[in-house]
Image (spheres, rainbow, N blue to C red):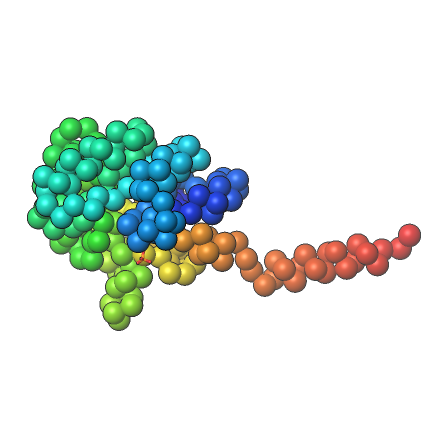
Length: 214
Ligand code: E4P
């Protein structure tokens, strides 16, 4: 399973990339706003750090604007994947950008029906938001199971990118379900590295070594 960093913080991306953990990056307007920088500048810098799909989201709300903005974003670097929001305009923009040879990540997907339409519109990635579904007492991972099974039934090429990840078990569950990729905040990837028995085991090894017979 591919792991994407869900952040616009280039320092976080560099750290994860140094461990070989980043197959791609996803950004959104909220994440880039936190940096206080221009969207294009941030995305350009990320493309210089990670050699993989880098999702950059359009801000326009109508199909024409999304297509124009998507083309501008795609021109930044060949690894850019244009993120369009789910809905009629997002689907039109997705189809048009895909027809012109660009990769699209359909974002803000919350139902299996939306995911089905996303595949038919020719998206490269579908982003179902598991955490935000869990937040309203729905089952985010059940949606992933449904989408994986629907896409397999028909051989759709669209890859399932589990988004809105909140904790390490979302990542493990995504892998068990056969999702293609998961996009995670740096903190969640770091949490995945740790286990109390690893810490305890290392402390014991170091202590035994310190107390060795000399
Ligand atoms: C990524 O593509 C999404 O924009 C992101 O995972 C949303 O996460 P959030 O629900 O934690 O804001």
